[in-house]
Structure formats: C-alpha cells, structure tokens
Image (cartoon, rainbow, N blue to C red):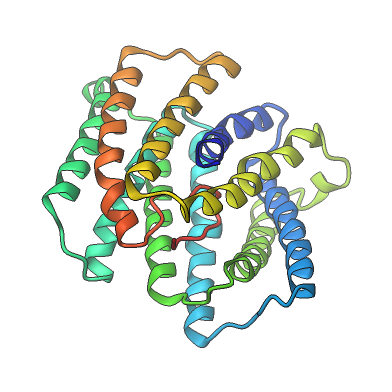
Length: 302
C-alpha cells in the first residue's frame, strides 16, 4: 500500500503537465482539485458520522489548521504548480526531495528537536543531490525561475508539517483535512477572482475536464487513504525506503509519459537523493512526523 501511495503521489506532476497543455492555469487546476477533494472528504465525513465518528476541535486545533491551510493548502501548492510550468516534471520530483531536510530544520527551530549526525549527513547528501542536478545551470547562470518556486513550495510544506505537529492534536484527522480543504478552496477561489480576468468562466465550459477530475482522485485521495493506513504498520526504515523508491518510479514515468529526456545529472541526482532520503527519513518517522506529505493537503503525524 505504501509503495502504491508513493508512486501515485509522485505522478502528480505528470497529471499537472498534461492538464497545462490543455490551457488550464495552475490556479484553475488546483481549484477544481480542491473542489473534488472537498466533495470526497465531505462524503467520507457523513459516512463516518453515521458510524459514530467524533468531530470537535480545540482552539489550538483551529489555529494550527488555519495556518496550515494557508501555507500548505494555498501558498505551497500554487508555488509548486506555477514552478512546474517552468521546469520538467522529473526535475520537480527531484527538487521536492529537499522536503525532509526542511522538516528537520523547522523541527529543530520550532519543536526543539536535537540535530543528530544522521540528520546532518542526510541533509548534506540531499544538498549534494541538488548541486548535481543544477550544476550546469549554476555554472551558466541560467537557473529557471521554477526552481526557487518549487523549493519555496517545499519550505511551505515543511513549515505546514511542523505547524500541524505543534498545534493540531485532534485525532480525527479527516475532519482536519476537510476544514483545511474548505479554507484552501475559498482562498484559491478569491485568488482566481483577483488575478484572472475571466474569473470562474472556465467552469462553465471546461476543456478536457477528465484529466482534471482524475488528478485529485489518483494523485491525492487514493494515496491519502493508502499512505496513512500503511504508515501505521511500517517501521521507520521501510517508510523511508518506499518514499525513496517512489520518486524513482515518478521520474521514470515522467520520462515515459511526457517524453522528457533524462540526462546524466538527473540519474546521479536521484541516486544521491535516494540515499539522503533513506538516511533522513528514519529520525523523522521516529519523531512521529510523517516523512512525506504525499497528498499535499496533509496529515502529518503517524
């Protein structure tokens, strides 16, 4: 289940790249994604309530959920999808490998965790992987704007993980995700009204709607349900291994589906990043911080 969840989550950039070819903007695509996720989570909540599922949040839960909705439900994803319009899907998958390093950094700052040699080594290896990936661009001073945007999205995701870990103690995680999705949907909707001249006209006669509807189900909801069911039964090493292997599958899929060319720097970078992820994800899982935010919308605690 973990491997399927990670692989499906890592083909998210492939879905997005395909949808962009049909003229959808990142905000439009993400709005529809949130809408579909919201409907599915609402139905899930209604079914769960019939079986006695408890629903209730403290002030800290609400505060953490609101902050996480902005950073991880709005700013981070929009930065990622905007950056994805400027770089290849395979490059974006490798760039997001930095997420565990940012999680460690914020955990030390906000959760007062101690930096171990294992975490330092893993972080340095991940930085080395990024250096290999971007070496030619750095030497020619021609780094795409999409690179810092995707890195910023990973920083937002890492910060969201820590905010959730620090404030949200509510155990009925699906309730939290539903609230986050609704808040994010409203915020992205406002952004579309402000930033796009046509507003919501894309909903009147949407072009090639099926890939847009398939993306939230295949790359968000199925991984969401599979990932956290599997995480409860895996040790730290297995979780880190599946996360690392999933990225490799994602890069191979990007090359096959989108016909992207994988250079030597891509292959070396993903190999180095895999080692870094394996090293750094183990302490993250032991801290009961999920080593990866697969669905993009959350949750963040084992």
